[in-house]
Amino acid sequence: MTEKSALTPREIASAFSGHRFAETYESLSDDVRWVAVGGATMIGRDAVIDICEATSRGLADTRTEFLRFLITSYTTLVPG
Image 1 (spheres, rainbow, N blue to C red):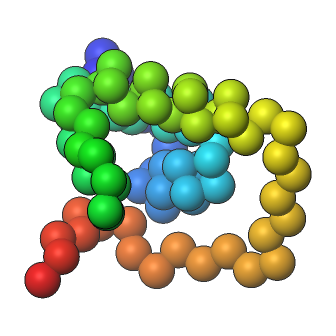
Image 2 (image 1 turned 90 degrees about the vertical axis):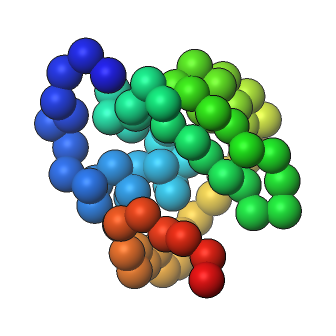
């Protein structure tokens, strides 16, 4: 990460959760770790961006309408 993001943590969470991944890239740390529950763990900015881009390509022909979109927390979550 070369510069501080202009987005707030809540805006980053909203964009990422809404699959607007590219909006969040400047906010990703070089040593980001994304743990997909029940799936793989992506480590590093490039790895996370790669999976986000692949997901975006996979969703390119998909239309989603969120009837309700809640962000309950935008802090680090650790399963307990």
